[in-house]
Amino acid sequence: MYVDLNKIKEVFEAWWNKSLDRPLIQIFSPKDMYIPSTLIDSYAFLRYYPDIDKALDMIFEDFSNIIFWKEAFPNIFVNLGPGCLSAYLGAELKFDAHAGTAWFQGTFSLESLKEITFNSENKWWKYTLKCIEKALSRCQDAVVAFPDLLDTATVVGQLRGNYPTTLLKDMFTNRLMIKKVLERVHDIWFKCYDTLCEVMNCSENGYSTWAGLWSRSKHFVIQCDTIVYLSPKLFDDFIYPLIIEECERIPRTMWHLDGPLELNHLDKLLNVDELDAIQWIPGAGNPDAGNDCWVPLYKKILAKEKLLQIIVPSEKVLSILNKISPKGVAITAICKTEEEAANLIRELELKFK
Image 1 (spheres, one colour):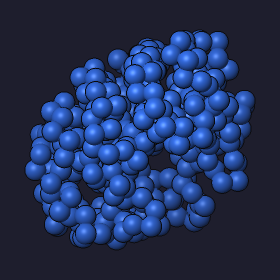
Image 2: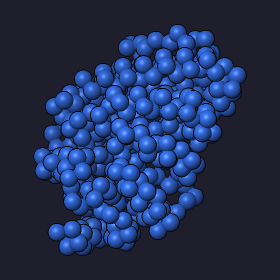
Image 3: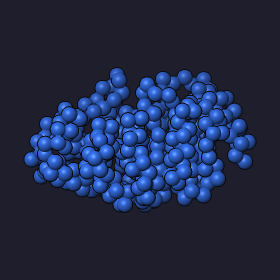
Image 4: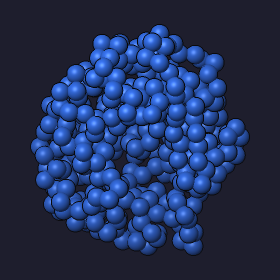
């Protein structure tokens, strides 16, 4: 058995309900004598496609070499790449096994997207369902997480091709048409999400995503990669209504705030009452999430009574928690050794008795 899932789930519920009087703590470390290149191969389902059992074998082998501390748990992320909804709707899925990344390329016209329908016989959709069903059948001490559908606007951009250029041109030259397309694809997004909830038996097993936060109530990480290119006016016109609908229809939502260019829209996001949490990812080339420069940002988010998830270097966990209110914070770190993790946990437990 990897962890005591029942105990962990109770802590998560307290965190979501804002009654946990300490941070939610997820620490991962390799077992001693195990030297991994990465702790978990997040692209196993594509790397070993179509051999689902092989992918799961490798994921479970990774889990067996990891120690999950405090609220960390084994999370089986059925990953077909960020924006796999694009593949479900007919975009070409491309996977680079060496780089460990996937992307999508479509060539759809606006006219065809305005009439697009969801095909339940789609190859990648059927593969996703098989992955989930097989994972559930083999998974006793782990949680199965949603694939990354991504957001409607970015998915439309992937379907159009030459992302983000074509999508941005559409917003200026075909405003009414692109709005209709966004509405149609958004409806399909919800159809996929609701179907996945049923297939994953989430009412019984709970909800998890690539972000690794478990919830008893409906939950999803919402985001929009495209907003880094948008002015406040374009954001309000095209994206904000989609966000509001997602937050109203999904009881527990967390916004994936991806880098400084998204901060232009933070105030608007923080004013969405139904949005529960913010995940801050500084992005490549910027100071890591444990850097003091982000403390004002964290205080701003927490002051608006939003929950906060951050992923920080292990050596900065205590330092950053000394500078912000720990209540409402979910903090994740990966330690290099079991000894380092044990020492960190000991210090955290002394601090938050």
